[in-house]
Image 1 (cartoon, protein in one colour):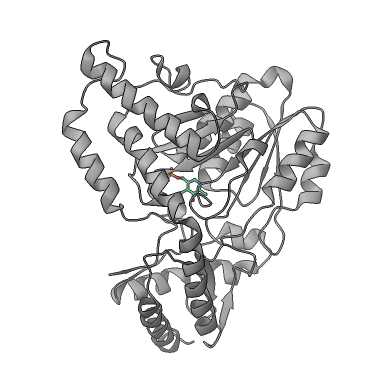
Image 2 (image 1 turned 45 degrees about the horizontal axis):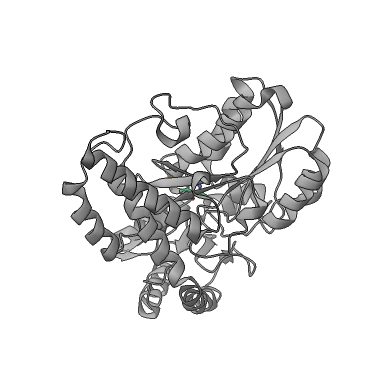
Length: 375
Ligand code: PLP
C-alpha cells in the first residue's frame, strides 16, 4: 500500500517505538503510588511534562495529558464553558471545525442552554474574521477555532483573532492545533488553551495533551483522583505520557527541513493534478502543503476512494472521524463550493516520508480512474 493519509494518522516513528517498548514492561507502577517504582514513574512523567513545556515555551503545569485530542478538545471547551458559566452564556466557534469541537459546542448548546455563534468561513476556507469580531458580546466567554483545517489545510489567522478577542472582550481563546503541530510555529503565549495529538506527529495513538494557561478554571469531565491537577481523573498512562516528550522533540527537530521537502512534493502533485481533466483543487496556495483536497468532477468521493484502495493507495474521502457517514464534506460546502464538489472530494495528505515516485504512481492511478469513470 502507498500511504497518502497522514492527516488522518501517521505511522509510528521507530525511535518512539523503541523507547516505548523498553519502558512498557518496566514502568507498570501507578504514578500515584507512594512506593519507589510509583515515585520513579511519577518522576519520569513529570520530566516529560517539563520537556514538552520547554519545547513549546510554556510552563510545566500548563501541560495536561489526555488520551486523545478529541478528549482534550472536549475538556477544554466543555470544561471551560461549564466552569465559567457565571461569567457569561455566549460561545463562539466556526462552521469548519473538527467533529470533536463541533459536537462539544452542539452539546453545550442543546443540552446545557449556551448560546453558540457558528462563524462562517470564506471561499478560502478560513474564518470570516469580520463576522467573528461582530459576534463578540459582553456575554462571550470562549472563542474556539482551529489553526489548520484537517480537510483542506487552510490556515486560520489565529494570532490576529486572538489579539482582537483579547483586546475587545473578556473571552478566552482556544485553538485546536492538531494539524499544525510539527508543521507551523505555535504562538502559544497568545492563546489561552490549545490542543495536540501524538498520533499526528508519528507518536502513539491514545496519547495527547493540551495547553492551558495557569489561571484558567475547568470543570473536570472525568472525575477521579488528583491526576492532571484534578482536571482529568484516571490512572496515568505513564509510558505513553513519558514517550510523548521524545515524540514532540523529534517532530519539532526537523520541522523546517520537512516542511520545505513537503512543499516540493506539493508543487509536484498540484502541477500534475492540474493537467488532469475535470478536476477542481479545493486547497489553495495559502494552505499547508501537507494537505491537498481535490474533487474529481466525474467520480464521487467514495468511488474514487475505493478505486484507489483497489490499486493500493490510501487517501481519505473527508475527515476520517466522519468517514462512516455519507461522503459529503461540510467544510467544502461551507466554503461555498457547492454540493457537487463536496461529494466528489478526496483528501491527499503528504509527509516527509512521501516520495516523488509515490506521487508519480498516484497520478498515474488517478488518470486511469478519472478516464474509466468518465460519465
Ligand atoms: N482536531 C483535528 C483538527 C483533527 O484533525 C483531529 C484528528 O483527526 C482531532 C482533533 C482529533 O484527534 P484525536 O484522534 O487524537 O482524537
